[in-house]
Image (cartoon, rainbow, N blue to C red; front, side, top):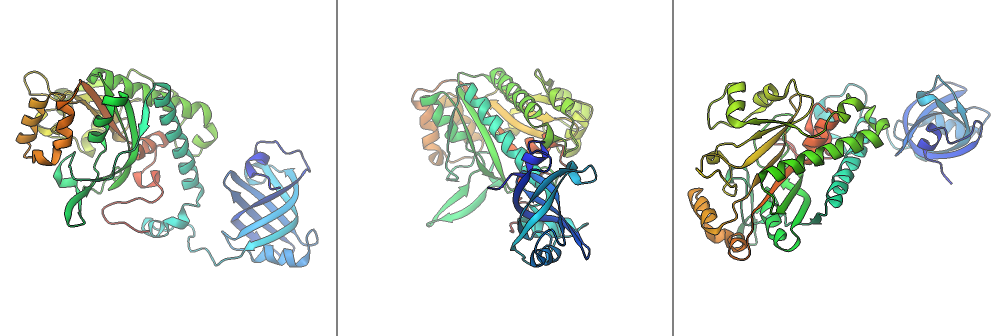
Length: 425
């Protein structure tokens, strides 16, 4: 029976109690008579000492020759030791080298490119281990929020014949002799679900062929998209506020030990509570010095959020720069939409809007956008049969994680990042 390292670190093992561990060598050094091995498993790291004479000679030699990332098993006694990492030590009475392996190719102070080339190995680092644990908790809290609000989780297709967010960012491929695309968004399919289940969300990959090299862009990312019948844009923004507040509060309440590994305080997370700030598009462009019809880039998002402690909604963009499906003000000038920007330059994490729900208006907007209505017959059918007002939004999961953990780059919020110059490993 093997003991999780976390069990010892939480003080659940008694002083001098026997415990058996299995894991991987995180750090190691040795002398003629003593081997110091810091061992990691999925739950934590602990120092282990293997002393000559305390274990058989062959086992001591195995401990001395172990590499970083060799797989090992140990049995020994647990002792408090303030000099050890995390304050605990296992003094081995038995050591087994499960797999010696080869010298680990990642050492200190490696380049970003090497760490990306060896991502399959770098995922073992404590930094990325803690990010991936945090990611799992954050996704769990997102699902928990929607479950508490009576939403149904569904699955959209990834292969599609229809663009959603504009043709310039589509990944096109041959689908048995026909042109098809990797999905930019499951939103249009979400709209099909609302006439049966009313309130739905999906969590699936989306793909954007954006030639962007910023610290917040991925070409493949995880997209949480919500859609709800009878919601207007105000209802939609309120739901976003409640969702983000819920996740931040749960994360701070349940995962303090994880959060301590990042440049993020519990107080900052607890302060992320609704209502969020709001700023009309016209005020925002004046504040950051761009002209009417321009969208916000990284410098503008930083200018708009640098002094904030919680997110801000930028509302009512010009309809002419937004997708065809967004409802507009009666004069057609503004979209009934919002972008939610995270504080201190982390940028847009959510985009949402009220949708056009009437057939004639939608067909007109699609024609103006130069779309072939034949490719959207199924989507137009939704407006022919029982259409109702509705709204929805899309959350970039990695952007949310980047902000909540205060990461420098979005590539560390996903196990295997895909950016414009990288599709390996």
